Length: 163
Image 1: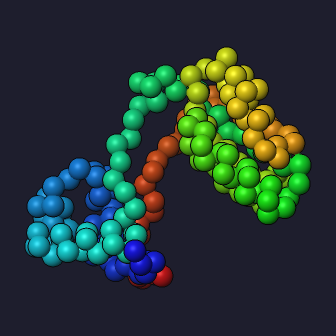
Image 2: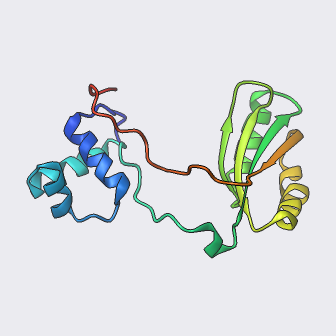
């Protein structure tokens, strides 16, 4: 897979439509983007091969899987060395409740986004799972009271093609 991410305005239109409906048929996608079905299919193939389109997924309602509570956790490590970073990252990848984990610059080392069923489950998550992650010195948790905006949609824009 190549890492050539340069895309043109037509690719951006395709991506915009796909972000709204990943199950759209090639025929409907082609029509909405002003392409022939064959040209549309070829562009999609190239976008996938180049890694621009990474995956097509189903977005699931968290309540349906008893994952009602969304939490963010700031993590401060006891040391900031490559081996501690590596051990932390390797361990975090194996924890299913953690949806995202980002190394950040600032007053702490990582920001975690996780989902659990409720506060009792979060307490178990914090005490039994997160506390066992190598290198963790301190955590600060923020429970989400109201989700104001949630999207997986990236801003497509129609500006110049970029690399």
